Length: 277
Image (tube, rainbow, N blue to C red; front, side):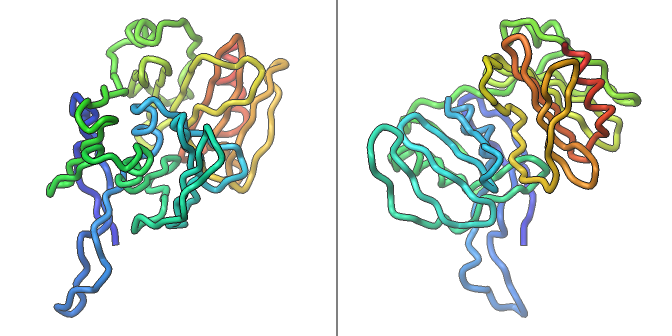
């Protein structure tokens, strides 16, 4: 059983995020079921990027890899088994459990137990604390808080200024309107369009130097995948039921992605991509 509540993730400036928690307790016929402990879940990518870490999905793992620079960890959806591996030497921890497996609690977003970040921060005291109201506070040193990486803007010009580079913006799909301009840690631009039924997320970040990279934040292993050709630019896509949920491409030292929970047609995706070339 899962309940959704408004939980404050304090990343220094107390950015408000709605984060799911697993049930604090389960009662059946007046009796408390043993083992139903509370597990607070937080979004993997948002918190990791706030800490200056990277999160990657290589197309094979049904989950993601988080890399801190000191250690890394492969996370598998539905599997409550965790293990840190040294990124600088040979060595790894014994497998351990945190009471809940990584889960995609909303389309394209992996949630993990908040306690995972204490492990990745070296199990230092005071790095992660969870209040009785579900408030989560994370710090790298146990004293110095992390600056909120998400900054919303009123205009496209403000967004471009915040990330420090110019980038093309495709026309919104027919019937869609801009619902959000946002930068992530000052390094990635995000624009969302909505038609009151679904939302399409467009992201741009520096890169695209010939190596494959995915900045979409969607780690779902979809049943279908392939490539499209947009005027000589290769577009890698993933989806299901004939609809594209994620599309990623690179051009002019920039990495682009489109994400849609409901999916887009190939024609829609190609039009969006061509608008950026």
